Image 1 (tube, rainbow, N blue to C red):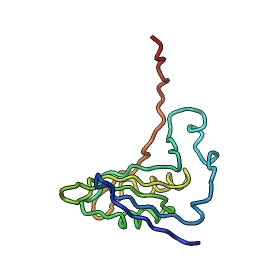
Image 2 (cartoon, rainbow, N blue to C red):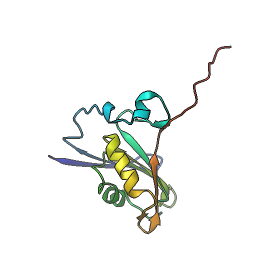
Image 3 (cartoon, rainbow, N blue to C red):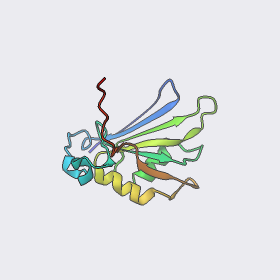
Amino acid sequence: MSNHHLNHTDSNGTIRHSNTTSATRQSVDDHNDAPITQRSGIRGPQKSVEGWILFVTGLHEEAEEDDLQEAFSEYAPVKYICMNRDRRTGFAKGYAFVEYETFTEAQDTINGLHGKQVLGKQVGVDWAFVKSTKARASRRI
């Protein structure tokens, strides 16, 4: 199985890191991997178009995408990392998004890393997208 690492910085100073393998490029239907709350419409994590995305807070300003790759891949293969940087200083803004292929991989990472130290700072790890419990209001006039 071959690994491909892609890094690029967009015009906003966002460093995008993608780690794909031939296995992650395969179409995976993990709908049944979703929690019951996801399938029944009750509040819970929401899958993005391509995977399960975590929001990481409390990152050290000198964190690099390789640091995140190392820390987060201990729990499951990372599909994608998006880390924003300050345009002027080049330092990390203190947050990142990390994507996993399946719900279980993402949940294992939350359970393992939330509240732990990464580069000497305690990080928060949670779902980036959560389905709301509120019903959508009708927009009729």
